[in-house]
Length: 272
Image (cartoon, one colour):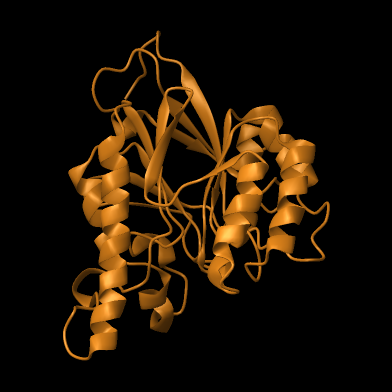
């Protein structure tokens, strides 16, 4: 669908699963510098650290402060909870100017961002139900709670363009390529339900390191797996981020997902 002439585009760079560890100093500076040069907003879709340690978050914060000159929005991933110090990780990132979303939303440059970590549980008819032992019900409750957090965040947005940020996948299509046995641990279709009830322009997630790069919800919303291993496979000679061009000015009501243009990093930098 052609875009109106008066419609401006915001370029959102998205990546996930950077897994910053104690030996990761300066590993991301080149990528972050390229992001700053070619995008308006940076989104980090979880697994920001390797073991969820504040020291790892400080390394990432230094990388961001050294090279990123645009707003940064993030959600946590499962690795960021490993040490039980996720609140400290968030505090370190907040001090570096990163807006970490957990069931809340933010508007940047006319684009609304709603984010939460998400959770596991499986897809479609294979999704785990709340029946049987209390521990199973607790597990499913966590998946439902994360879906409700996403719904609440989306409901707060009033911008025509809206990006949903998750770590776990909301659809099966973007985990295809992973071993079938681990599909239920990579995401949950309960996360897709809010994406169908509220207008969403695009969705980004990580976690599925060997999943597919792109898919769509049942209502046609594009979903992008921006895990670093997936991006490296997509653009082996490019920088490891995906650019999503989102229309803002001139839009009335919700933005049609067909007006969203997504390009690989090499295309975004003119090197494809």
